[in-house]
Length: 150
Image (cartoon, rainbow, N blue to C red):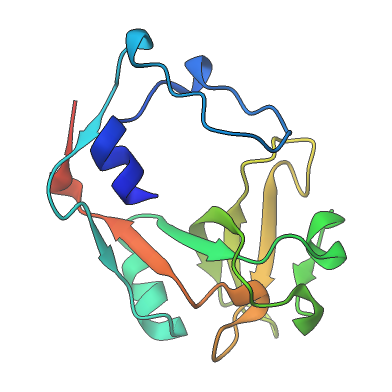
């Protein structure tokens, strides 16, 4: 994902709305770019709970998860704790934060499927070890703040 931004830049969300239909990118350079990335635009974050929480204390992180399973696609509330979510990454989301109060610690994740999905566009995914629930611990990255311009 970061390589795409480095090559093309980011358009305004209003120029590139979510459609809810699988397809190809509709990048249109004539609409203008609102931000670009420079060399080495992101850093991989160690995918275990401690380093991920530390990273999230500074800014959100991009992660890939498996989203093609029923447990994820039909989510509406609560915390996904089921390993039935799988670990074969097929979808990018953003971890905005975490909650360690209560008996089940979880990641607060923003999905791109709009506010009619999940809990107003968000899903809570339990913290775990290894690949994590839905594979959330496998590919974690944050943009370098200094890498953005625009």
